[in-house]
Amino acid sequence: MDWGLALLLAGLLGLLQPGCAFPDQLTISPAALVPGDPEVACTAHKVTPVDPNALSFSLLLGDQELEGAQALGPEVEEEEEPQEEEDVLFRVTERWRLPTLAAPVLPALYCQATMRLPGLELSHRQAIPASKPAGDRLPAALWASSAVLGLLLLALLTYHLWKRCRHLAEDGAHPPASLRLLPPVSTWAGLRGTDQVGSSPS
Image 1 (spheres, rainbow, N blue to C red):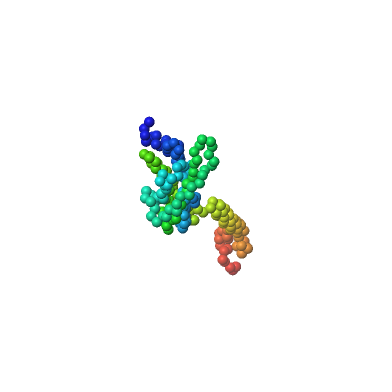
Image 2: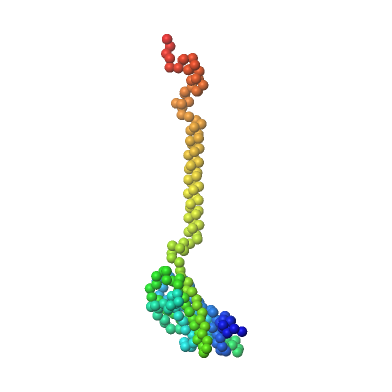
């Protein structure tokens, strides 16, 4: 088997050498980073050994280590109790005190964990989630409320327009009393034909 393929399979399975484990299981805390957060933590799960000379962490901005970040030292805890004839596995957490970060920088941050053994080096990388600006996280309920309010205003406007048009139609069907006193147009035409319009009795 090709050595590169064997190394890849070993990394996926977390099996490096007898008594060693390094699966691709990295988690980040907090769940989403926002500008002003003082710290960030990266945890590698189910690993062994935990010797700092074998397992190390890096906080990356792109492909370079983040300048100004201060590593606070690893914290080591046992995973669940091992079964018989099983190796003890650990979760190792590295924390960094962060410099002031601008919002556009946050999506480019990564945690990288590296296991170095004789003749072998393997790294896993995990992106650090960045929280969206407040303006981009408008709750869905607020959008729904705005839509309902818009529909109500549209219905109210439609009702007022309908009511106004109805009044205009009724006014056209029933002209003012002063106009209703005038004779019909046909009567005016008959009077013109007999020269009686506007003439005075002799």
